[in-house]
Length: 164
Image (tube, rainbow, N blue to C red; front, side, top):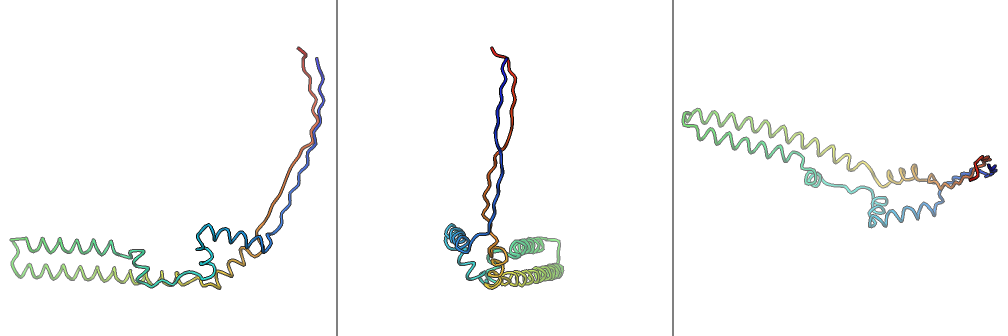
């Protein structure tokens, strides 16, 4: 039988301090470098002011719905023209009704597109360089943190064992 005694010590310490202006600048420069300078361009120049045409080119804004409407109209006109049971007057009236329906639907799509363009243009122009500078000051103005820490422990150990 044996008797074992052991002792260990433990303590914990943690420290936190804001980033200095130089540390924050180095952090930003590193991020900007990783993005090929685009972060710096965005921070100093703000968001680009896109035209409504550029926004529509990127987002489509109704292009699929307009294409589907055109296809449906073409099919309806083709069916009207191909139907041998219709008189000339019936064909003309059917074509007139089809055209009116097409124009109403197209007008609704175009109104939605104009609304989307206006909303996107307003949103796109929403952040100026001053707004971005203010946001950077709010979120990063000395608020970055450096944290360090460590730990140790105190323990007393008693063990009983059988000697072999």
